[in-house]
Image (tube, rainbow, N blue to C red; front, side, top):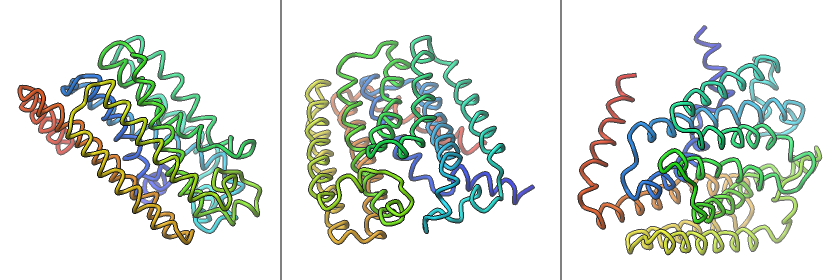
Length: 307
């Protein structure tokens, strides 16, 4: 039983939580902005759990779609569906169960969030198949990862202002950038088996194009700061994010697969510094919000420890 559970954890990639973080940070950005610095504790918990569930579901359906390809890629040849530890039917059932649980969480919110949730499932389900038909599956992944943005605004504020879509665009562009780094790790194998990606599309221009995308991400996030009246701490966080982007370009300069993977992982820090910038900025501008935020964080930690 324990071995079976470990295999399911491996399929959902819970032992490698980087994907959860990359979904979670933009979600938290949106929640804090939508709430102007004080998100509801219940909504916060729902979206944190939702990030784990939907990222896990995405990994399951991705491996379901790629089971015929993964055995030919060095990095993925030991995944459970390739080795036969889990059958395709089991994986599909697990994907369905994870989506149902996530939908159960959404039912605790409001009508608008529930309506938007169908878009999240559709994007998560179709992304893995895009690499067969287009060289830009990373755009679909970005759309899926960023879909938590309008959902967070809907759940917290019961509306999705047009400026929220600017933040959505920033997350899509950012996702395309870091997932291109990820795809650069497998480029040679993907070329052999016919899988498409932005890494293949960009070719020798990959470094220049990803650098341009990073600049574009910062410009859009700067626009977000202006639209939502974020202050100097937020702008400082964008400066730190820019330094991480420079470091990522340094890592990929020789296109070494391991270094490209490190560049991908480094984006976790981009998400963290921007989140901290948003939280601290709102706390400085509205000191009365700081104590409830700390209390919400304390409640969250206590609830996780009790599970």
